[in-house]
Length: 483
Image 1 (tube, rainbow, N blue to C red):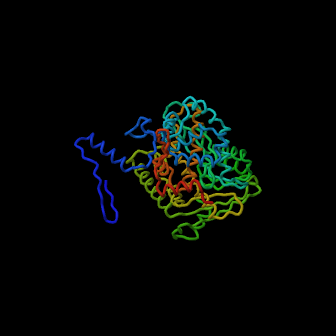
Image 2: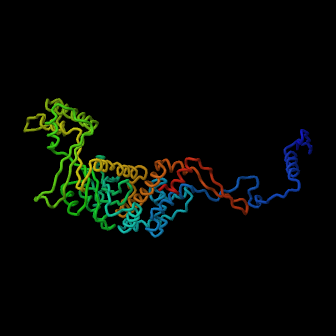
Image 3: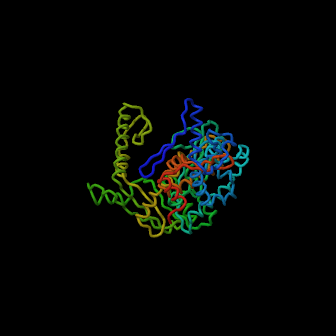
């Protein structure tokens, strides 16, 4: 031992030793000498049977992550809507933490430090989650959070979820697939608000046409929330002539992307008035379509035709490639496959130059139709382009939340699975909006910082990993959103 005071130094010699046992004895004497008359708290390490060894960890939890997810879940009103159902809440949290099968979700919850339900309990609860009234309660909570009013703007789109099976059952049926898959599938329609926040999800048979899903979803949504004036925004693939009529009959407004089957009058007129002139990038031509005595069943409509140079460049490159293939097919150099520019009349083959001319004339143009009162071109086109938000929601549900229910076979299980994914999607959209992080980044970052409890004799000690500043800011943004 040594001490230093005013430049002087003294050393107290306690003894010397020549083996390990004697050295340990001298260390004990030194420790007691340092303590002097100071008392020592007995933590009971010896009584716990861990003297000289590590203390036992009695619990470990992803507290920051789980509390953030649970907080948003409850803020959205899901706990109240489901009657405080703990099983459903834990399934939603597990879906966000690590999308997997319902059986493996128990392992995910246990690793997060939660006390999961038993597997028999989970199976007993699933049929309740598949009930229409359950999904309606979730949709009502989302609608209340979104603050819908009498004039609500909604985005609509559909996707397909396929199954790794070759057996159709009336619900899982082969149908049109954008991924060109042949397996049985279901069609899922998603309705969101203008920001892409989910409002309602509906599942249909896999062979049901996309155009036939819009009105059932809209009617269910409007009935559930007593809405009378809804403006629906959808892509051209969602809208048929019957859909347009049905939307008008229901007194609704729409902003729709439209196909252009023939060269419109306003485009032909512009070319006639500007021979040889290059079309200005961003040019918008307006075509009013007022209601007449023969079309009193509908309101006045306007179609805007917008030209984009980038869109034209991509279209013209595709047309050039198809014309080149069509020419080779006509010359017999390659077999005739599906090519819209090849005309067959008996054994004769020719390139359809009239169709080529029309396609080149329409390259770069896109049509936007609306029946809202006094529309402006910026509002109509800008609102339509917000459809990327619902596409983002679909990407999140398919990738981050693994919505494709490959682990489910029965319709009830599939619908229950979609209810869980729908609630998880709402939670993730809120977290991403508030933090500016992707949900993957947030989960990967936050799950590393755990809270643990240690048993030291009769005492329980709580410890936690210190969290970095960026994560702390993200957690604060989730708890205290800016208004």
